[in-house]
Length: 352
Image 1: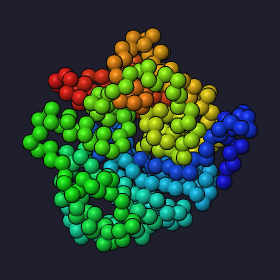
Image 2 (image 1 turned 180 degrees about the vertical axis):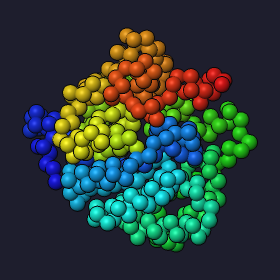
Image 3 (image 1 turned 135 degrees about the vertical axis):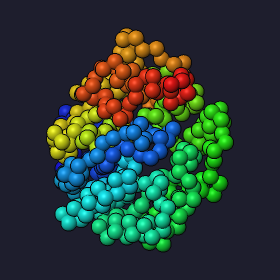
Image 4 (image 1 turned 60 degrees about the horizontal axis):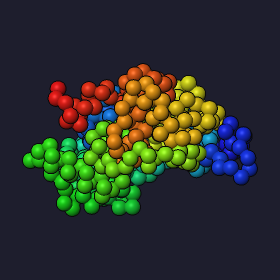
């Protein structure tokens, strides 16, 4: 298990200054592919998205996390939608179980596949036998646009029977009582439903959420973000997400690559990560997204009048950099971004 002083940044800080926390969890994103294209997606997952994390990548990252955090290491398997590659998911868990890597804290799903009670029981009982701690079911008005709530009801009931109620999490279960129906909604009504859902519950304005929901909730001027840096987000991150290609994102900061586990073990990435010495990250660390904004404006970026939050502004600037091929070693992969025309089409601003 690593110690705080093993991290490069921590070695250069004074005793009283905040330190880089140990990463204790890793979200392994098996794929960006998903049967849904939810408006709130923190990436740009959908039926046409790609990526498949090799079992070797998942297992080596898992082992490296254990070297970093010891018994406190916590892994969750997610996507995209991991059940879209169920056999691969099961194989990774089987090998991890055989290698005694420990329990999977959560396996996440949107429940699209839950149409047959017998299959649900068969899958969940197998995953339980190879180390699944909890099943997390993503459910909210955004998922309701693509997935029949009857499938979620069936999955919740069957999972609680198979695993016990305390091992089945539903985000957000309150929407199962009165599911939102998008069947007869026009574009304006959908936007109203999106806005209400985002304000009712937490929403990160990155990925597709920044392009579609962000503008609907934009009520803050750029000036309100001046002086608000992101040092706490990088130093205080309790873990990382690792995408199908091995890219490492600190905490919940999707689309900002701080390393790749196919090039360097995860524990070494943590040991050598200095947020003050990495392009883009250093600016965010010191000045927040307004620091990035200055560079973008100098290159032709035209900011909106308002944003929904710091992450919304940050994503907008990074999308500009992505479109202009700037900082490509850090800003990527394409699965976290879209070309400008595609983003406008998704937001309903231009037609195909």
